[in-house]
Length: 187
Image (cartoon, rainbow, N blue to C red):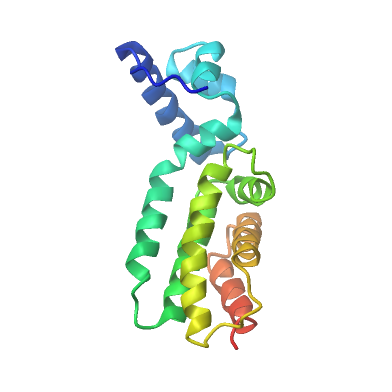
């Protein structure tokens, strides 16, 4: 059961410091950065970290909420595009960029897509719904095959981001892989 009472000022400060340090640690070392170090850098004990974030995925979910809001906003902007297939492709590129933001995020998102109890499913479900709408429009326009599913597309985008993560020197790899994949989507 979630406590709906407002947080005390010190608890809100601790929460914000933890998020700030988690963002920095995830950017520097990836999503498997030490939670103990995040707590230390935030000036709190590990127990305080776990009171706010019961596990790593809950912390990742909180860290990625801003990016999630941006992706969902972008999907709403693209929903009325004249070219539904182009809109879908643009959104898939944004997904790949998001999944590639932090080392380890693509792998975590791939795992969360199969685990509804995961704290990261709070990110995955709205993204899936947004993508489903864009994919549906592209399929209705006849530009994307009817047998393509949003689940497959999301797994593909995460796989592309993961492949690009493994070869950071090749900055064009993700786009090349997406282009290659998209050729198979067309009806």
